[in-house]
Image (cartoon, rainbow over all chains, first blue to last red; front, top):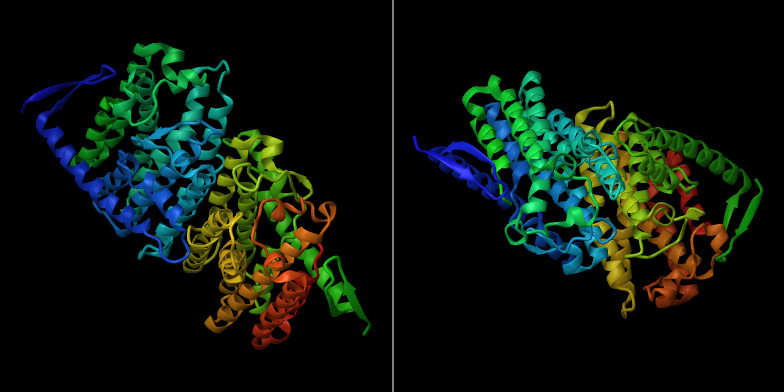
Length: 313
Length: 313
């Protein structure tokens, strides 16, 4: 088996075999296709939805995203050996919530970003009011997608409980509030981790938990997936910080150098580039250890972990 | 029985007996108390929620509101003869969604209001970013309140389906988008009605439907409650327009004269003050006709309809 040493823009090197890469890339393409198809479907509105709202939602929701979070849902279901109706619905719901949070985070009152997924942000393209409302609509509709699932009501309710909590004031929203408050403040690594455990980590973790629940996974499996998600989310955020400092705006599809401009707490600022890289690599190793109990069915999750570390967009 | 001809700021006169008024006012006070207690409870956050976010949410959620929508949920359950766990949870969820929509509608990018429920709006008191995020948090948490209900999962899922749809792009959000777009445009009564059927009506209707569903009401009962809600919602909006033109800022707890200032379509502008009053009164009569099948248990809903017509805040 050929061993390709992947070298990317932020300088990680990890052994990934060529055939692994081909298999992961095929798997990811297929999952992306399924998710994109359902998203295009749910973002086709009937009577009552103003054209400008539909356009604003589709502009960002159907733009080429990594689809990392929905991929995690489906991979978690696969790891537990069964992909159900609820898996695909949860995958879409998670991506819709992620997208709503991007729309709102990009607003002038928050990060004031002009580029997202390689396109003008929603408020730049459709105005601020429509951007706020497009985010609101996606948030409400995310829960609707799961609630309309043809599946056992017990499972549906459990998934909605998990997702509402992850998207709520103590998790996703709370993390964003603290992230904004931390601008131009003197912070430490623990404080930064606390922010990202909620701002990024909560949605990673819930993606994996939903995948496990949708598959009818056992409690021990769901706990392991959750811990994998916690480590992966943090590693993702560290890489994100490194890319913001060192990456390329065109390749990333969003503005780089914004963190420094906004005086944000970042991992490279607090522990240096080398220290950040080492921490990310260590978190990925810890994430993958959680997958031991699954065997072969968790192979995509293992590979995705290294993909997250090696990503350049 | 004494008959008090109520004469209020917008000039309606309706016969309401003094004892009716006393009974309604006691009932409303009791319901308000129950709803306020649960809202204070759900807006007490543990670890993870930044203090400023909790404060921003409580500032508006616990401010003295009319609590009309949660009242409709509980009255609809009472009309069907049974108030359940899901009734109170739905009442709170509906009020949380209404409150989120007020926070976002008041933002500078939308209606740019500075006063709400007699207090500075959330963005004035806590900044724009925190206002957007407080609204987001309330929206997600509203569904969580129902999802955490100790009730049959079938009923819980049904309620969440109804509520996500009412809060989504084709109803509440779509109505607000069209309302903003209609500013300074030449419109007609049909167009205005189409806006308010979604912006105001959808939440009135779903409040009544949830009350009926929570009570285990029959389909015919839920349909009647829905139609009552549609007529009541429209009448409420007409009175709102009249109060905005003729009411008193201090009594209303929000700025008056804003509709004209923003070039908004309103009922008095399109059909005159007299015509608007007649239409509102007619809608209230139609609303009450829907209640015939319920008998005595719908008495609070009948009285509330006249209260809506006669309100001065």
